Image 1 (cartoon, rainbow, N blue to C red):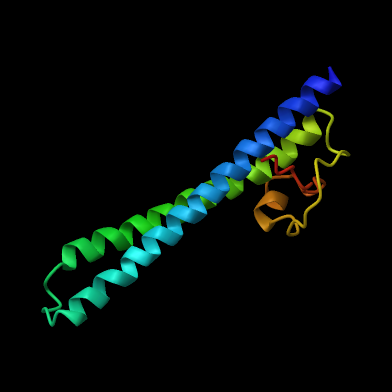
Image 2: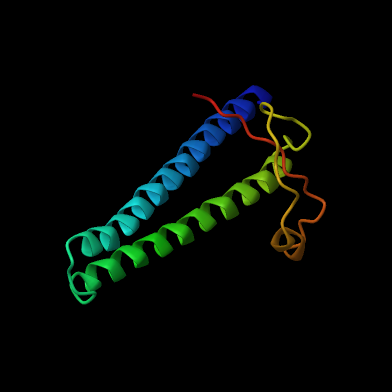
Length: 122
């Protein structure tokens, strides 16, 4: 039973890290696009009105990606609490440095939960 939980935790940690990496890459790509739009406008001597709707949509996409990133980090913290609930709270799945527990975690009554590094399984 413990081996199944450890295996599941490693799989979840791997998928979580892949998702976190993917949203970071998405944000980087959107930010590059957001920077390229005004550069192109300036380099072509176009009016600021030209392409403004597209600039606004890209800015909104970057903000939305930031919200997705926040949800993933919230899920990461919630999974740390889940580790403890399933009896894996004292185990570590790899090395890594984690930030201190967030204030929101303490507000949810999870102040006694210590975030554990989850494995990066490539």
